[in-house]
Image (cartoon, rainbow over all chains, first blue to last red; front, side):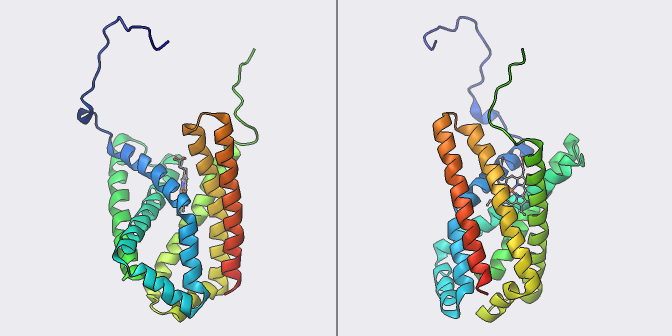
Length: 130
Length: 115
Ligand code: HEM
């Protein structure tokens, strides 16, 4: 099968940067990625949650772990992924109810999702990581 | 003859609804938690623990976790179905996903019930 030569000239576009994934598309793939990454890191998150609640000592130990800059940075990333999944998820629920399905509103709501999720991520991170 | 491709049984609309119902529960919980964190700014172990030891929050957090595990099962199964074509491998990943999620559910109970 793979040996069959393609004789017909078909239009090809290998200029990849000229293909643009529209904003709602970026939002959508990020929604999937965020869901999968959060799933994969659930044991770490559950462990942190457990440590933070089990006793004053484990709480202090969890604080010590999260005082590391790299850990803070990763946790900020996870909080942002969660907020993105949360906001994009609500947008999907509204789309399912046929709210805002025309192109114009779909673009606008995508911008709103990105803006709100980053804002929430910064605020929550400031509260729990600083 | 209708040539249906059988990919499994017992899901479809029911899971679609379940994924959205669990999403709604988690969204409401997230809002409650955001408001609580905003209002209380817990900065000590006692304040942090008190949030989740509160009867209402304990119930809501438990509901959140159960919703989460169901939601993630449907979501991850969709993802495995989209990208993993060999049946055996996909089945293994699905079983591993269920096993992990059931384990996490037990773990979540343990965390919350010790408060
Ligand atoms: C406030 C919380 C959440 C809301 C509102 C929410 C909402 C949604 C919605 C509406 C979908 C369906 C999307 C679609 O069919 O295209 C979805 C899918 C999914 N969610 Fe969530 N979710 C939340 C939390 C989570 C969390 C915490 C995780 C992981 C730990 C997660 C993992 C997933 C996965 C893996 C999918 C499948 C993604 C896909 O098929 O592209 N969700 N979520």
